[in-house]
Amino acid sequence: MENFHYILEKENLTRESKIIENILKDNHPITNLNNKKGLLFSNAILTKFIENEAKHSSHNLTKKEKRSIRTFSSGEQKKALLKYLLQQNPDFLILESPFESLDRNSVKELKEKLINLSKEITLIQIISRKEEILPVITHYFEIENDNINTIIPIDNYSFTDDVFTFNFNIPKPITFYKNIPNQLISLQNVNVSYDENHILNNINWTITKNEFWQLIGPNGSGKSTILSMIYGNNIKAFGQEVYLFGKKKGSGESIWEIKEKIGYFNPSMLELFKRNTTVKEMVISGFFDSIGLYKTPSILKEKLAIEWLKLLDLESESKELFQNLSNVNQRLVLIARAMIKHPPLLILDEPLINLDDKSTAIIIALINKINQESNTAIIFVSHKSIKNLQPNSIYKLIPSQKGSIGKIIKSN
Image 1 (cartoon, rainbow, N blue to C red):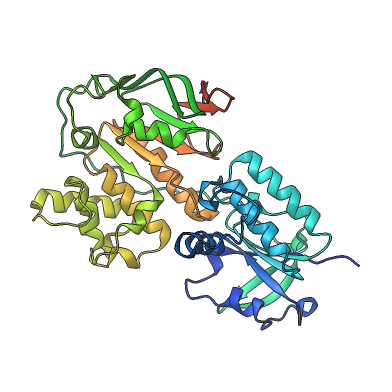
Image 2: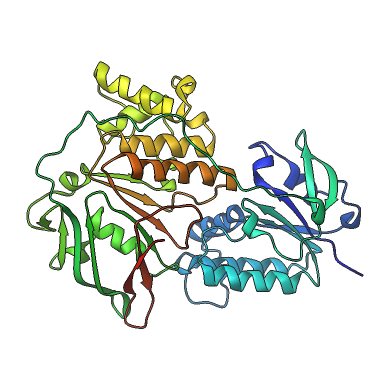
């Protein structure tokens, strides 16, 4: 008897959606899953195990291991969670964005495991992107009023590529930097290791004004290490040939003097902004590099913030609370916050994580536009290539036993 396997799109679920909960509680119209036991495979479930391990020293996922689940790579963590769930002998699994945060090899390995698993149990996959869909999927759920309305064969489901454009130009800067050299960042023969763990091996990479770089590499290849040497306070950068805006790191310039020349965004920043800050105040706070707005801005700064919100089609949301925005709109606002001073360098660290196809297209369109209409150099960090992104060059980290080596690839 053929197993049926299902998908539903994450963007069709509201924040308050109880569809997953209802399926697990046997409150659903999926007749072949009536009175069946289901479990959820998701980042949220994995996070709960990690938190319990930290709080209560419970090692449910790593009973036979001698190290914490926190020390595992993203791929290893998901492998351990899947193994644990299967030990509970479920009849079906709900897979919520199972490939998020994984590099190409980890995605391939997990896909193979799930395809083999599909011969034994039913899979329900919640997807954010078309490329994630497992080839074993037979049907999709059509959602209406936060309920499963109909179940339709996958052959009848049409996917469209999302293309997005902005109607206004990038606002002009009112902040101007002095004495910025053409060579913004230079790493020369940089090596990093922690005890016996080699991270970077003889890295040579130079970033000059107006360039658009994509930094790629699998999980654990050293992308975060490189960023911490540029933007953070990684002590491994001191004593090496690391030059930031014309000065060798550790030669007297403080970390704050470096950061004021760099705009930075990482989705984890969303956890920092829990205060009752309006959308306009959030954009303006980029002038002061603050979490929230504690200074009275000039009329000119307020005007520029509104121009950015107009570009993002969020002008009508200017007085709304930032935390009430959708996921993608929060990211747009924080990228505008990072760009409002038109810094010499903009670092975007995995900005597309946990976004669906439509939201991904919006963020990519904004990044390409910033590249085309400003003089800010960009470093876009990801663990894989990104469709429709338009970098000038790619710096690829390739793992080896002696640490990752770097390779420059010219983008088409």
